[in-house]
Image 1: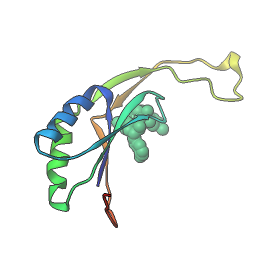
Image 2: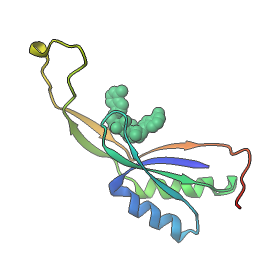
Image 3: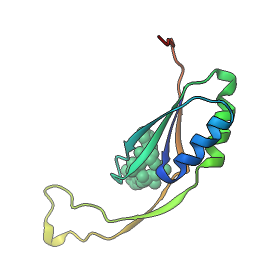
Length: 107
Ligand code: 2BA
């Protein structure tokens, strides 16, 4: 099983590339813990020998982008001394986890 967190902008391209290769996937709407921005998590169930094609599809479909964020005020901080400087972070291409699945059933 490959789980990939991708940017929403890359999600249609990745979905299309997986379908082209006959690879099944489920898309989940997710939210990044740091930016609190929406992203998309793909659950892609494949045999071991298909993992590298899935990783290739992810790599060609997902781009890295810069995003400017203004950090939120930390809880309990002195508001007078808090200056919310915008910070630029590099998001993506994709964050990928490859998991072994113990059992798979479809009813
Ligand atoms: P976010 O958590 O919203 O993170 C967006 C981007 O902010 C990250 O891009 C990274 O550049 C930066 N960032 C995240 N946490 C940070 C921190 N503690 N300090 C400084 N900068 C930080 P990516 O690394 O490309 O991650 C994109 C999205 O992938 C993340 O969105 C999150 O939804 C997911 N993700 C990344 N690493 C993960 C992990 N270890 N476990 C689960 N999800 C992860």
